[in-house]
Length: 183
Image 1: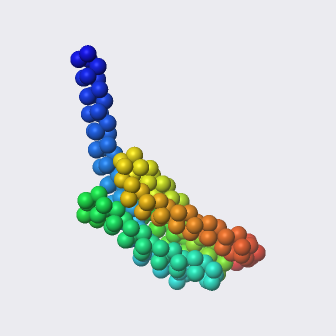
Image 2: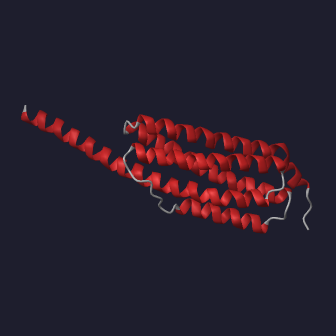
Image 3: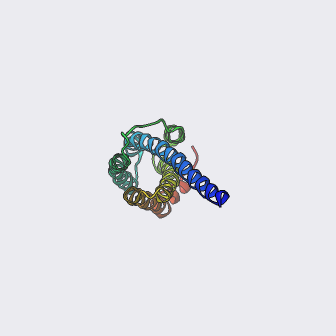
């Protein structure tokens, strides 16, 4: 009987430890995406300034507004878990933003640059979708129901932004870029 009881307690202790470790990872990833979203509020305006397609400018402008909302939602998630909002440099997003800057500098203004901006923006969207999907799942495991609702809402917006960028690319930008001759 003692072995069975100690095994049950050991399993409970392991579950508690794992939940605690998962909570630490959850918080660390929140800090990471919080930095990333705040950095995007500065990077997206540069993309807008370099875009020429009205559809692309509109898509990026809408996403900039959503990104401000994402920052606010993340603040709410921090509040829900009783943690001060804190940003930790996201090396992945830093690299994606640097790559977007390089693309904008190296591509000729017009449809070619627009295609490059879309490519860079979609890489950002996919990173964000992966991060929010992971955070949502961590939140579900940790029974953070209200946080999960906020994270899921942001995940849906990231998916919609990615779809909008694809539509802009397929609808006109890529076709126009493909028809341009090399100079």
